[in-house]
Length: 97
Image 1 (tube, rainbow, N blue to C red):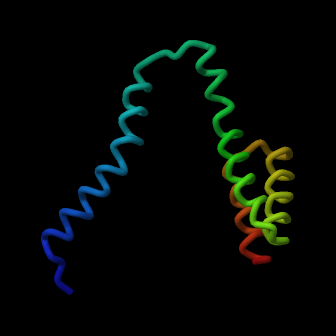
Image 2 (cartoon, rainbow, N blue to C red):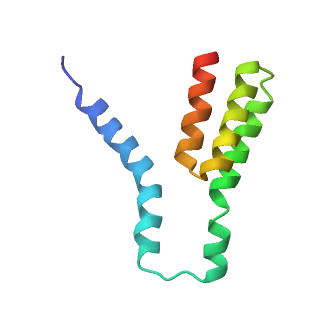
């Protein structure tokens, strides 16, 4: 299989455009000591992201979605782990959907 050079460059450019906005804040903020108020505010970001994802699914009006939301909320309250919460919600949705 031959890969055309312009396609390879396009893929590399897309990877760079995707990676830079994620890496630059980590590099910049890793050297700073953030104020306590900012750290307290940042603790709420995962909860807000999870709420947004669940709200989108709540509008789908499917039983698999509702049961996935219920499972995700149960795991979130029990473990307070974002990875476990997302894994459970996606797993239940996938199994029932």
